[in-house]
Structure formats: structure tokens, C-alpha cells
Length: 367
Image: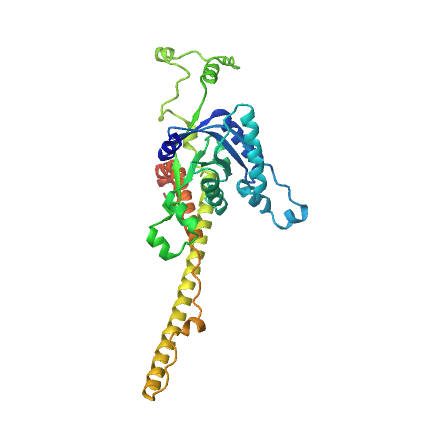
């Protein structure tokens, strides 16, 4: 009864322990630029998925000849590690050992590293589908962006596959007809859950009691009475004079994200050209079938008039073969990735656009 009620309660949020976050960040940073993956364990409490422990999957060593010819082979193997048979056995053994030492031993998903928000890939979808279908339906994929986190902004997000996409992926048909019937779009692939970092009360009290280091330089005397009553630990207001705000250099992450966005748009254009080629091929074959059927009807009418047995009119299924429609899955994933890059560009350009408009008159030629 309790399990049925738990399954009926939808997942509302993900709560990750601070120690788990540190383990994930350390593993992903050490494996960068290759993809790092691992398993996360915890428990589900009233729709909140609590992640209390994690362990990485073993690294795969490739022969020198293979890695020399294909530099992406190791990264592809690491990205597909969560659903491999060897790692499934390793994960089961690790969870068994955790259960023996009285640690939360419920598998609640897996984690992976990303670079500049590039995580909507076929490997990521297959891994999450494997977890939600085979292991536990209430599992999540935690994505850690190493590049953005290296600039001091921790990027940690939790995703699940939507029920509609799970049904379509299980069926394995991503044609135009099936997508129209299911009304599935690129926005319905992933469902993002709010993620919070949790500290135990003991750790919180310890952090509050950490002594601060004495200042290395001589303190400046306050210049006004107002500065005496001001707490030096309070953050400065947004409009406080800051020379860093006058820097007009464009964020290098913005340039890299724009390059990746252009690559994704080119991939989308290639997928569109392939689909248009399929439509042209289909139109030509259907025209041939229509002409053949018209010719056969004319022949049968002449044979009937001559009191002869009419020929079968369904031989076109054997004579003509219609081209198979390409899967639209790659186009859906690429569209979702384009949306991800667009959101990143929107976030990067907020401050850059304001600076450019402020000095627009000085940048124009002849001003």
C-alpha cells in the first residue's frame, strides 16, 4: 500500500547532500574533457528525491591503436557506461556493500558531466531511458557543467524523461505520423526538477564556528560615521562603483556558446535536407505507382472488353518499394540542444548588451 502511494506521488524536487556535490564536482573535474559518469543513491521522501551518496563508474582503458584512430572513442564509452552490463554488475555490488554498512542503498539515478551545456545527446537519453525503464521509474539524471562551474558559478541540474517521450521511445517510432498523433515536440523530451543542496545541522553549525583568518594588510580607517556602523561582510549594492563593470571584452564563454549554437543549426539544416530528400524520393515513387495503376486499369478494361481474365492490380507492392522515412529523433534532440544554447546565449548577453549600448556612440565610425 505504501509503495503504491509512493508511486502515485509525483517527483517534485531533488535534494543533494553537500558531500555528494563535492564528489561529483571532483570526479567530473578530474575526467574533463572526457565524460564522467557515476551512480547516485538515496531515498524518496514524499516526492522529494534525497541524494545521500554517490560513486563513480570505473574508467575504461582503450588500446593505444584504437584511441589513436578515434579520439572520441573513450568519451563515447564513458558516456554509455551507465547502461553497460559490466557497470550494472559493479553498481549492484557497490549498493550491496553500502547496504551492509547501513547506508542508503536505493538507486535513484546517475550523474554525468557536460561541457558548455552540451548534454542533450543520444547517450544521455538512452541512459536515462534504461534507468527509468529497467531499474527504477523514479530516477533522475544529474548534469554537472564543468566549464561554467569553473568560473565560480556551480551548474548542477536534474532531469527526467517525460512520460510521453518514454512511451514514444519504447515504441521506437519517431515518424511524422506518430509525432503528430502523440503531439510530441522537442520541449517534451526532458523534465527539469528543482535541485537544492542540503547540509546537515552538524555541518552547518561547524561552518558557522569556523574562525576567520586575520587580515594580511593593515585595515583602513573609516572615513565617515556611516562606515563605522556598516557591516563589512554585507555585499555591496549593484550600482556601487566597480571598475570590472566597465570591461568591454566579450565573455569567451559567449563566443564558444555561439560557435556551438551555429554547429547545432548546421546539424538541423542537414537533418532538414535529409527529410526533404526523402519527401522527393517518396513523391517520385508514388508518381510511378499512380502511373502504373492507371496503365494496369487501362489494360484490364481492354482485357475485359476482349473477354479475357483481368490482371491483378496489387502487383505494384512487389514492383515498387517506397523509401523508409528517417527517424525524427535526432532532429528532436538537436532542437532541444539549440534551445539550451539559446538560453545560455540569452544569459551571457544580458550584461554585454548593456555595456555595448552604453558606449555605442564611441564605437561607431566617425563618431
